[in-house]
Amino acid sequence: MKEILANRVKTLTPSSTLAITAKANELKAQGINVIGLGAGEPDFNTPQNIIDAAADSMNKGFTKYTPSGGLPALKDAIINKLERDNHLSYKRNEVIVGIGAKHILYTLFQVILNEGDEVIIPIPYWVSYPEQVKLAGGVPVYVESSSEQNYKISADQLRNAVTDKTKAVILNSPSNPSGMVYSKEELQALAAVAEEKDILIVSDEIYEKLLYNGLTHYSIAETSEDIKARTIVVNGVAKSHSMTGWRIGYAAGNVDIIKSMTDLASHSTSNPTTTSQYATIEAYNGPQDSVEEMRKAFEERLEIIYPKLNAIPGFRLVKPQGAFYFLPDVGEAAERTGYSSVDEFATALLTEANVAVIPGSGFGVPNAIRLSYATSLELLEEAVSRMEDFVKSKWQD
Ligand SMILES: Cc1ncc(COP(=O)(O)O)c(C=O)c1O
Image 1 (cartoon, rainbow, N blue to C red):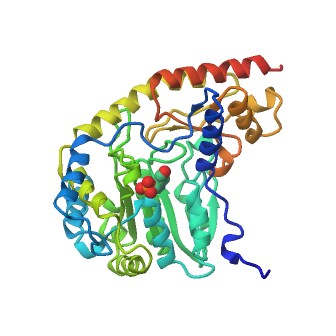
Image 2: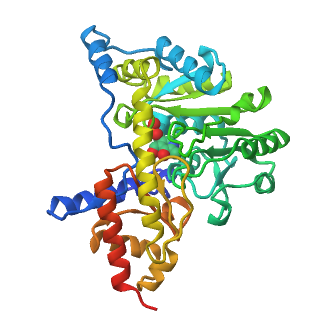
Image 3: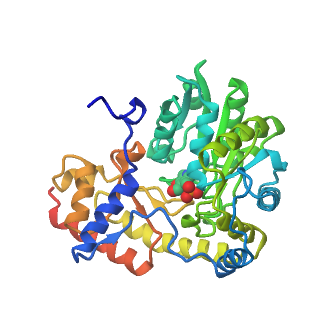
């Protein structure tokens, strides 16, 4: 038979985050008591007022197609949110609603990248950025940020990475997987480079609401009108309102980009699920107390678990400031326990200590593992003690 697959999917690697979760589920199905720290989603149910609004919309018969870029009422709710929380003002034609921030980003790269265009991606990165860029014909250009620099790139590093092929830089603050947050000053310095070099900024702000120790969110688009004009703000309700399964995300930015994304959506998805759009209207227009309650629960876990994790021999980590992940460097632990790579160490944690973690190699940091604290304190404490026992029992001086 002739080659059946297109070249563009030949180098595609499946999401490592989803792969480890599948493996953990397999073990669970065999009756093994696995604690999964791989999850990329809050462990709370969607707030009841949002569920009620969704049910209400269906009962009223709002079960048909909507405009491709989203319901006008939802765009208005998003516009109000961007004004209220981020001091950013947009018009309806500068906003598109899509099927989760993931698909919004996919669509965005499809409309802004020509073959060979470079996109700067700081390491560590969210697993889907490089694949999405490549699928759009773009070339990921990685910029290293070590744990010593708190996994954040500097303005000089960004400047040095720009070539005449650079189209955009992706920033994700708070970050998945590092939990690091860029300060306002750091973002302004990066923004100045984007302006100087005339490149777009893709600002993924999906973890905006999950900030700890009194930090507040700053969107790089707030820096100036010029910066706002070259920034596409990407956000959604998955992490803030515990709505991962509803699949609603959005982008706000340049009118031509938004129009092209909407045109592309009209041929690919038609529209984001109608019921989920009604749910999201309530998520943004209704009471926000549950957002803060969930944030507080994450912060409590962070405070309790961080010191315990840091105390495991061979684990080194900077305290996260946002999102719900730890990214310890476990290179030493892997070496001292006899594994030739952290990937192997992570597999052993799953099969021998029965704790599922994500190997950092998928995020560009092969010496690290990512652990999510989107699970109960009780399970987190048990997982940390299993990992500690595992490391101590195999430790060789
Ligand atoms: C950094 C980052 N961006 C985007 C997304 C996608 O979010 P959504 O569920 O809205 O597609 C995720 C989800 O894990 C994420 O971690």
